[in-house]
Length: 199
Image 1 (cartoon, rainbow, N blue to C red):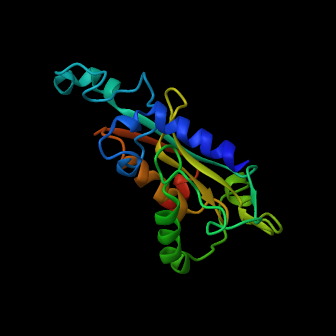
Image 2 (tube, rainbow, N blue to C red):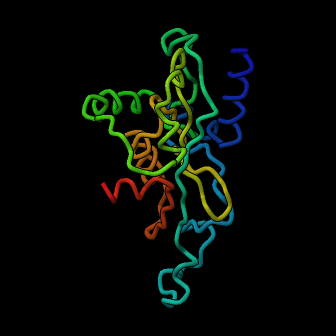
């Protein structure tokens, strides 16, 4: 199993051209091994040089449309640890860098209070902290930031959830993605964003 993971990791680095970098694999930066959405606007890659001077009626063509969502069906059992089975991918592709993510969560976990939601029958909130949903698991689900136009994953946009869909997790994934996306104008869609605005 580990050999298979090593082979997949090496293939990812090869496909991203990391062997041609004078710094080698160690010089790989966050999100540099992703396959970017070919249809989304990427300044310097697939946009005209004068794209910033587009008329107001056409500027929306150059916006980035992203969506944030989670999946509570993907769980990971507590069978190992990072010290026994360390990851090979340190934020090079779609998942956030694990060590920085856990350090961030350890700082803000103590500040987050569990509040009862006033949303009426919203599954993202209702099912997040159900009894037994996190017992014996290292993660209770996965969160992701995606391109809403073409359903492609963005760099450093996927992360594990520990206790349901909490803003502390989603914020990290969101800002980690924005750090790796050069777009100026962004439209964000998030199914429980209204909860943050109302509260």
